[in-house]
Length: 293
Image (cartoon, rainbow, N blue to C red; front, side, top):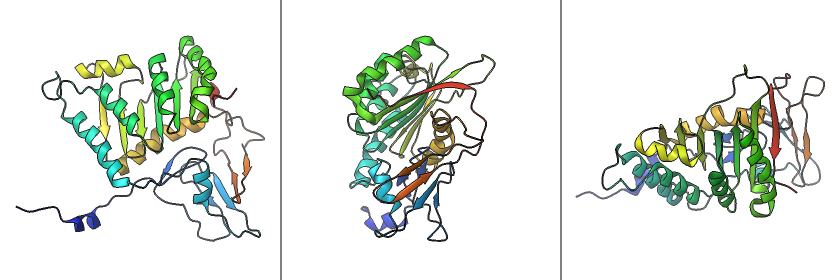
């Protein structure tokens, strides 16, 4: 009988996300260091530039700045936390359709709620529609971790629900930020991806919107939901299918003289300057829900 050799940990190619971009919420496995110390850090996804401010305090640490904005994903018990999320994924993958014992009581909805309960750093999601039930779940989750979501909709009911969510500022604070995309012209194709990213370690993807009806239908195979635990694929899915629409739905999308600049001075000495690579405004109505009074 052989045991587990802890030296095997040295052979693991485990490179989880360490930071989120402050602008587009893409995931980084490390700081995008510039070749020249005086040059800007630049996000590989949205090309936003982070300029260190040289002064009496010297060159600021970008990691400190991102941490102050809730964009550092460092955590103490990374292995333990990853293991707990992996257990959720394994139970999810072992379920049968139609449900059979012992996994008949472990539904996709249960896996989603448990992943939300375990989250330690953030939740990102993209969905076509949202319901009051799931908005309540997201509000509860935002008591502990930031929740950022893009809701695509062609329904006035969904728009009214999201606008009504502003009244829940006292419950959710600034940790719940939702953005809506709606078509002004029915001929315009809206994003249709359905994605939930948990801590950059786990992704739920498929055909199910973030509604209780869709996730309960998935138990009987009437909606498709897959779980992804390969961290490289998780990062790629977030950066390819979430970050672009998060950026496009931003209220900063309107170009100024062909470009969109915004700057932020911070006590740690980082100046953030963003330039939109596409100067054309997106053909969507949009609004931000920072849930502020």
